[in-house]
Amino acid sequence: MNVYDSERMAEALGGQGYVSTNTPDDADMILLNTCHIREKAAEKIYSELGRYKGLKAEKPDLKIGVAGCVAQAEGAEIVRRQPMVDLVVGPQSYHKLPQMEARVQTGRRAIDTDFPEEDKFEHLTKRPKARRGPTAFLTVQEGCDKFCAFCVVPYTRGAEVSRPAEQILVEAAELVDRGVRELTLLGQNVNAYHGHADGLAGLIWKLSDIDGLERIRFTTSHPNDMDDALINAHRDCPKLMPYLHLPVQSGSDRILKAMNRKHTAAEYIDLINRIRDAKPDLLLSGDFIVGFPGETDADFEDTMTLVREVGYGQAYSFKYSARPGTPAAEREDVPADVADERLQRLQALLSDQQKAAQNAMVGRNTTVLFEKTGREAGQLVGKSEHLQAVHVVGNIDLIGTVQSVRITTAMTNSLEGELL
Ligand code: 5AD
Ligand code: SF4
Figure 1 (cartoon, rainbow, N blue to C red):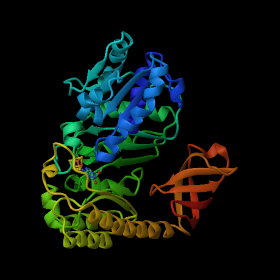
Figure 2: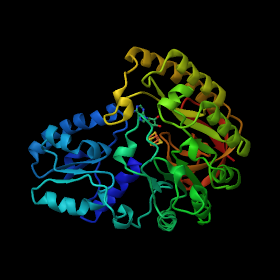
Figure 3: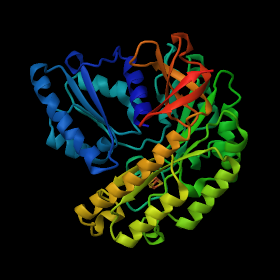
């Protein structure tokens, strides 16, 4: 979602005459978009700001801004620790960047971390018409009402809000006109989407009517919002790709309860079975937290058991990070060395499963949407239906098209194939 937000912020400033640069030395403004989900991500912002301090001393006209969820949660703290920061904008207010930029140009500081009444998306600068790459993110839902005990999202992104389907369909059609062939619908809790009478499945079916749009994905989902309509869309909608990121976080009922996840491990497994009945070929992805306060060896073994039973083609796993203001932050941490060891064991298992999923592709035919040229001459890179990177030798004209490919080799993080 930060990639999507950054794009929209760049577009908002485009109206003020800004263009993007990859070189901080060339910049008139450096805007850092930030993540608050774990402490490490949040702390990165201060070292990053430190790097630009010298540049700001050399170029006093350079403006420095902080956007995103760290800005939302720690706006005042950022300005206290780094008084050179000119602009602080939360994730719900970045449509106000043009006015904020104007204020900053008068030598004043601009801070906005409100949750405004108006719809940010209605007020954003219109998206440009220039051609762009074949894949795009599209935010359809923001915020979360689930209040998992470890998570800052309900505080930084606010309550769950769905964009109206009509608004999304207009943005999607514009992106397709600009060359986009695959859309990934985004939301912190995307399958709770309710901007269409038939929920996320209703929106997916509507989007699948857009000519030229060939692939639809969505991320990230909560197990309790996985309704039958969405499961059936995985079975029946040819444009919906066979990939599902469905985090469970833990395999222990005790920990799931302490996390306020509101389902058991058995209920999750039952759900996975129903989804696989509908779409046997689906590749499953997940998120896991190890070392949540109170997690015992037995709880962790329950997570390992669940992972073995489910089988993930891809997954993310994290060491629990206490986040200020969340209920779990008050509880006693698992010792760091214990959490480290659990993380290593879990990651080894998940990595074996990912390798097995990659190897299982060898000899299979799949379709690939080609996105760019590869490092080697004549090479093209794209994504399989299961979101695996695929390399082939092929003509550059195939970029932006979906082609049938036979997978010949599995590498650690990608596949090689030949065009059919
Ligand atoms: N500590 C560690 N991991 C976290 N996540 C969210 N909050 C925390 C935290 N406090 C992970 C969850 C979530 C993913 C986006 O980040 O696994 O699904
Ligand atoms: Fe955070 Fe996801 Fe839980 Fe919402 S459902 S509180 S975003 S982990």
